[in-house]
Image (cartoon, one colour):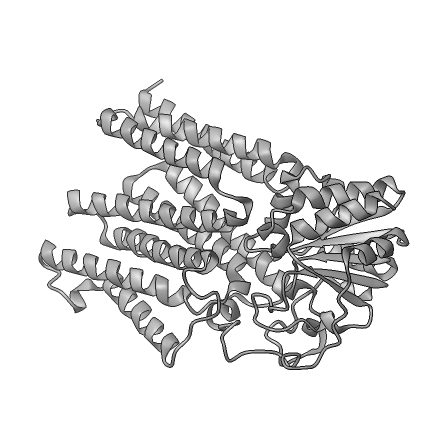
Length: 462
């Protein structure tokens, strides 16, 4: 068997590992093994690439890069908090896009006869992904306003940049002398600059409430850039893995959009969360009833069925472990405890699932939106821990609200709703939650971890 055939077989094995790994990532019980299987597939693909027949590599530089990357990866893996995982994913997306752009750039600069359109597609998408992802990172981290940042003529400017970029990619001769390599080189660098600007322009007007969609979309972009680079350098593993990432990212983006009952175009161009927006619930006087943890514990003591609704406030406080302890204490008292998981709760797809899995919460009690909503009808207490927009009843009836039409968790149909928040600040969508003033709602203010620790003491003393 020829060496090239062995390499292609290894690429095929890695592709199969990617596919089965992604399949296992679709369920929390098999996600860890799926991650390991996908990692094994990538290791096989790397080995196959480094042993590719006829290719020469500087293994000193490669080992240096692997060592540096391994150290950085280990630091991030051990020090990044669960609340910062969305920012981590955004950085990964950006660096993935940048890597594809660098590889395509290297190929073009070293081989002037490289297909210009494919080179520019990879560079354009990769560069756009890079700046877009780091804007998303800035919004999540607080370096940039989490609200939609808009200005007059913004979409028109983005459209002009996009049109100019496409024109340069398809017909560089319209702008530069296409009979000379220098003309293509000038077009190449202009495309990079335009892509970097467009990445910022497309992401900055998207509000924090839409970050889960943005993250999954940028993930798809990074995969498409990788696939284009794979075509450029004739690497089958890169084509397959990039296509898988691109397709799965688009599917996840679609799922996120359905979870908010919004179109992708509305997410990208709707500027939900801008300063000027707000539902009619803003400014309404609400009768807020503030309770202590002792009173909340007494309400839980009288309840038979309790549904916990985790949100970003739980993640910020790193309160998932004590939340599990509270649930276990209530279960020991003979009560039924379930968890309601909204598909866009938190700041990235699956954020709450990952958070609760870290605390070893049983997968059997994690219920998604469609499964849990009927349960609220006969629920004694809905305990909301830091969730906001995903439990706002305005989404069902207030047509002036930016979240109107978004499927929500029907917590208001429970007999009693206990809401834990640090303050009355609105959620990512920038609208006040009318649930807070409902007759069956009570507020327990404070950090989620501190509140749950106090609640756990009270429950154990019952």
